[in-house]
Length: 143
Image (tube, rainbow, N blue to C red; front, top):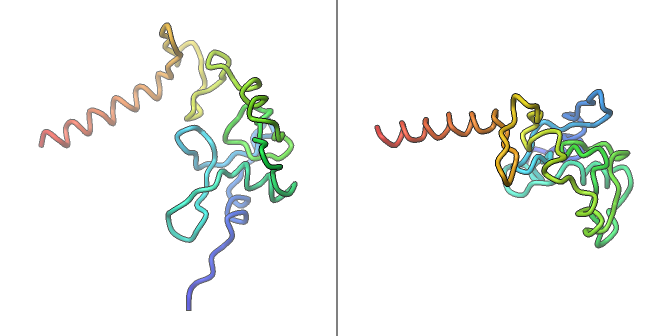
């Protein structure tokens, strides 16, 4: 007899936290900064939490539309902060890299934490972490 699994929506709702901004933030983020949860009991496909919660509250997202984060926080799943729009409108509304308040990992772009190159802004905290991980890998390969 197999053990019943808790539906993804129940697991997601249990882990959301409400920020001062009103965002419902999910702690597990993918590389792009979106909250994600496993769709099944073990591994495999993931679901973006903002889509899961929006559809739970409002019903299916209309065909051909994308959800725009009005709050500009990709980790947010508050359905009041999401609006279905066309792909083109989502791109037009989308943050330009220079307008982002934080990196994909959630570190604030402050003068102390930001290195600017001619093409992009770089989060110093993420850059530092990547360096630590790189050196650890190099030490592991040298042994």
